[in-house]
Amino acid sequence: MKNTAIRKSVILTLLALLLVSAASCGRREAPPEEEPPAGETLVQEPEETAPSEPEAEQEPKPAPEPAPEPDPEPMPEPEPEPAPAPEAPDTLAALLEAAGQAPENIPGSQLVIVRASGNESELWAYGLEDGVWTPFFEEVSGHVGKNGVTDAKTEGDRCTPRGLFNLSMAFGVEADPGSLLPYRQVTSESYWVDDPDSRFYNQWVEGTEEKDWSSAEHLADYPVQYAYAALIDYNTDPVAAGAGSAIFLHCGSSYTAGCVSISREKMLDLLLWLDPGQSPAILIF
Image: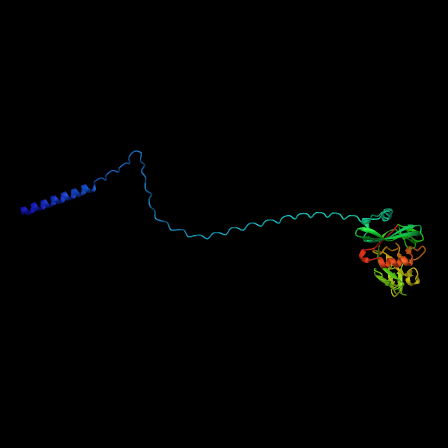
């Protein structure tokens, strides 16, 4: 029994020593880190990091469309240079000056000029060719109204109106001779109304079915004067009642009731020359 107790005591003692030794080993301090020598810098290795997952590629955003450029302001067109004034021979220039006109004021390229002295007149005809007024005939004798020319024409005053007028149509008792102007042949039923109270005042009327006038020229009654004639567009558009009617350029050898007369030969020459495409006109002064 005594030996057994001794063994137990020895075993316990050994166990106690083992426990003390193990505890001493656990408390041993780690050796101190060595400091780098003077002048040397401690380089610290960068810590390795786990590679990050690559970000998903994003589709590039479309570039914004550029704002539309404003339309450039249109450049002003240069003003056209004025056309040179038609060249007029001395005689024409003097006639136009006497009438208070200038070549550039003539509406077309054919012009008949009537210069009156009392009830007699002289006539010239000019055509514009390549910018130059060229005579068709000059100083042809003629006549105007019995009482000369006037700026204030009235019905029955036996005066010829002064001014610049178109020549728009031709007519005659004779057949069309080949007139370039629209030509109308007189019939036994052709009248030119000179009654200011008629709705047909200063108009050609064919027949009397709608007659409302007390006075009119029966054109067929003047086979000599109206063998060939041209209408002078006086008081035609608009028509003023009482301002004068039936103003023609016609055949004749004496004064008129308000028209312009020239020889039949020259009247026929004019009808074959006057061209509506040239806007013919007549200047009376």
